[in-house]
Amino acid sequence: MPTSRMYIVRIWHEPCSTGEVWRASVTNVRTQEKLYFKSPEELNRFLEEAERKNEQAQKA
Image (cartoon, rainbow, N blue to C red; front, side, top):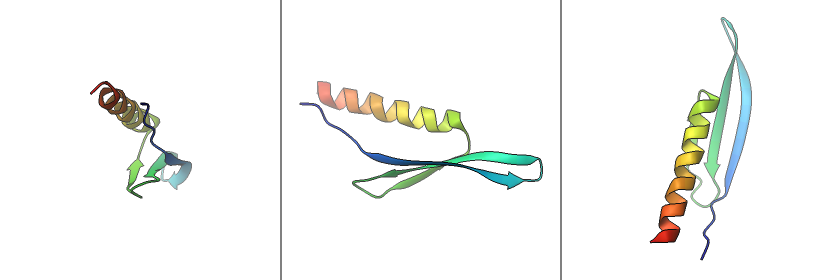
């Protein structure tokens, strides 16, 4: 049986001394856990890992 996870993803830019920096947050809808990211790569790694764990749980 497929399982799903729902996240709220927020992406924004913040001003800094060198211009603007990229930021993001992910909130798990079920647990309300919130994580913050400083780059698109960090966000992508988190989402890929969450999907990998989801796939492994489905196989178990």
